[in-house]
Length: 336
Image (cartoon, rainbow, N blue to C red; front, side, top):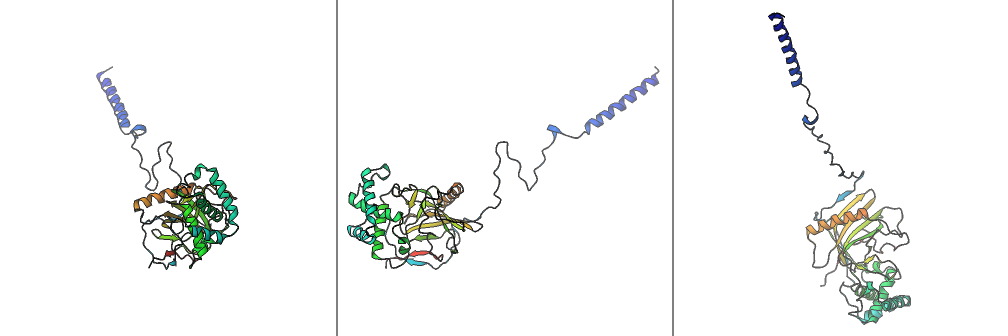
């Protein structure tokens, strides 16, 4: 091979090598070398495996949940509180209450005495500060009220003036309630919404209920509720009282007459409404941080709550806590 041939072969080899290097240097980057593509701006990046984000509800409720919302001025309906939560019944009140109810109370009195003699753990301590006869009479009145024998008592407590007999009955119920076990926690109440205006259920408002509001600590009541639009009330109880063993419903919670409830929020879903309330004790207002915590807790419990048995306790005679049949809020008269 001549020198000329050798030089030609070397030149060809160098051309081939240059072509290869150029191709290698300009190939597309892929695999581990590729930079991650950014997620579209309108879509969140996928969650790590095993941590799927919950899907949003197709029709989320419309919420009003500002605890300290703008105040609204509504005309209130005045009432005179029938009793106080710390009331101790007198012999005269117990006698007047018994005469007001009549002979129908005899069955309740018999059951109350039988229950006290059995000394169940749920009612332990009821007789520590009062004679058995006193507790039995008060317990009989409470039992009569829970089973519906005291027709329209709560409605009459909402209407001034309250008859002397009803005041005596309310005094007995209030007195026995403070001897019953307390429930601090969530309760559930349900009623027909009807056409009652809901202007008073704005976040931050304080409602007063003249009667003995009733709720359940585990589920919404089913008895007596049809297919019409509903108003659910999810209530945080501070002083509500359990009424075990009296009429077979161990989860019934009764609030003292003239209890106060702070409106925390209101959710609308179609024609149905859910109101979130927190019982507020006199001279013990709940701070805004605490109210926010309670509202979050109530919403979580409401989402998980079911409906009680169809043969369970009927809804509270107090349909719309703190409002009359026209949606007007109650306001207690102050002593002059």
